[in-house]
Image (cartoon, rainbow, N blue to C red; front, side, top):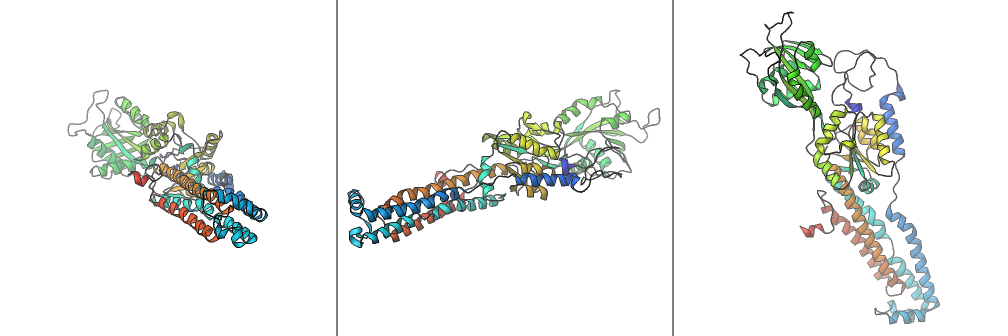
Length: 519
């Protein structure tokens, strides 16, 4: 039964009488008679959906930085303008003398003496309010966020909102699913090996020259009639190597063990140790290589051949072991670079999968994840709990996955990152979607988030710095209202220009201010 949609296990799981099966999984061989023990909201898929809804309700609401500042800034500006207007009414001559003593230009409109005390107080009030209009402050964050999300879309990274974009850079830990995220999610032929003579010294008839090509041709012809993913990988691998794959004359699928077939080469067995042992084949010559391949996380299968005329004393085919073929869910080309890039940033990298521990550890070793950071045989409902445990000490985790089984964990994480080729449920649960199915884009997402925050800080620094300098000048009566309005507009334009200049950034490297001048 193919349970990859729910558990992430890339190889179908053998089921027998009394075993539990999960709704939405796919039977790939024979006929199953099942009894429904859970229906409606109690089914696995509905429980996963419920976990997604619960986890999403726990997501924090991140308030905009500029909004928090504006809550205090606007009342302070109005109070300042009123205060100085009153002071200019109460003590115009004293204030005028103080300002005249400063090494600056003269009072606007000739001061109280030129336009009158009340009129000048109105000029000061208007200038102080206009110069401090928080337009630049209000534009600082949304302008940079708009450009940041556009950069992400241009590079195949979609952020669900500005709040997501702002918090992605805060993650301390990145948690990867295995199947379909770090690996291709499909079985591929990886190894074909010739095994020497059997322990009894027996050999094949002299007509056969046993080579890797011959072993693969025999195995592929036997597997041609099977729909099992392992068989399909063998057949496809043979075709890619230019081998013509013929249909078997006779075929029998042995669930959980392999296949028996009759081809033009003779009678063939392709399967695990149990299949060959029950046929009287000595598998000892292949044990060392089988163990080595399985330690690498591959599914190794033995190949045995018997000529139609060859029979043992009991009349059964006299099979001889000729080789090994191995399939694996191969690691994506960019997976190692993605893990390396994250570790260089000082982030913790974990692997959580429903696959078996041997395969999980093999993939982790290949991509550079610490073996101590591997969790295998994890059920879908337990993935969210595992993410919660990682975040229990205050760390912020990003979960990267693609399947229905990853949805609760995607929603439970501070940031859920869904692979674009994954299921709709996973994409819906995620905060970030990687359109290009490339784990290296996780690093790009973090760089874009970090760069956007830097740009927001630049904009806020300019907006607040401008106000820090210009408000005292307006309060001292040194600015005409029309000049204050022009300066305010220039401030807003400068913030927008700074944000638009950010469009040139490409997230292949960390963002640096004025980086285009360093090329």
